[in-house]
Amino acid sequence: MKRVAVLGCGGRGLAHMPGLVADPRIKIIALADINEENARKIKGDYELDATIYLDIDELLAVEKPEIAVITLWTHLHLSVIQKCIDAGVKLIMSEKPMAATWEECVAIAKLAEESGTILTFCHQRRFATGNKLVRSLLDAGQFGKIERMDLFSPPHLLDCGTHSMDQAMSFNHESPVTWVHGAVDLSSTVEFFAVPAEGMFTGIFRFENGVMGTIRCGRLDLDFWGGVRVTCSDGFVEVMWDGQIRRAVLYSDPSWKFPEFEETEHEQMIGMVRNAVDALETGTEPELTYKKALRAGEALFGLYESSKRREHVVLPLSGVIGNPLFDLLAERQSYLSSTSQ
Ligand SMILES: NC(=O)c1ccc[n+]([C@@H]2O[C@H](COP(=O)([O-])OP(=O)(O)OC[C@H]3O[C@@H](n4cnc5c(N)ncnc54)[C@H](O)[C@@H]3O)[C@@H](O)[C@H]2O)c1
Image (tube, rainbow, N blue to C red):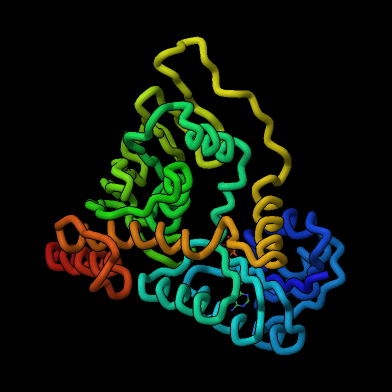
């Protein structure tokens, strides 16, 4: 049995539990949270024989887990991933997004690469039955050749757009993005998990395989909320984040219907854990490898950088330090202060 520690026992700590307890190859031996009550709730709800720690360093030193699940806020990811690697953890399953700044994303990727630790980020929606079915139909050419993709996301390009960009990349044969052009709207702002961000964002981008994409985050007249429209030469499909099919059309056959399917309970979290533990056992690349999260992140930080530079940005990203959106937020703040005097 592989020894698992869950680091962070808030909303996402709880959300990971169905996936973890469903895998017979693992045993949760420790939970860490600075709020003991949160850890106690998970321990009680799932009747775990696990030790509770208030301090992650102590947990790692005493328990030496083989697997760590990091469900902490974004700004803590880099430091805790570093601690896990130093403690000899073999598989780290972290929450998304990778980090709040591009340089932290790059640093995390470097840590994983150099240590050989298996590292995943929680784009769990790849394991939704609907998303898997769409992927297999697109791969089989059911709708013809992909021509464009329109991504509709909740606000916060980094926190929510990461799911949308990952979904689009998974549909588009994992093609990387080659250039991006974006415009930020700071007339409203949000703050998710201590990362301040825009209320709306609009961007266009091009995948390496020639497919064009648009992304819209926020609420202004979105066609739909949280999903991707994949337009192909022979038809199109509109898929929500969690794989529900909104519309699917084949131009040559108006009677054609998207195959019926049923979701199973907790399929996303169960699929994610199973796939990651398989990777640990077999040495294969996990579906949610940090490499894919880095590629999605690069496009998102590129979009922020494009807004800042007021020009399109060619990837791979270079010359980007920190989070360009933070600079834009500071600029906006100083503009508002100067005009209010
Ligand atoms: N994959 C998804 O669909 C999805 C959905 C929502 C949130 N998220 C991501 O999950 C992450 C966590 O979100 P959440 O909703 O669980 O937040 P949360 O606030 O509910 O939980 C975070 C927990 O971490 C604990 N904590 C904080 N600092 C700590 C420390 N130093 N050591 C130990 N414990 C500490 C807190 O006490 C809290 O219990 C965020 O980065 C967010 O972006 C992902």
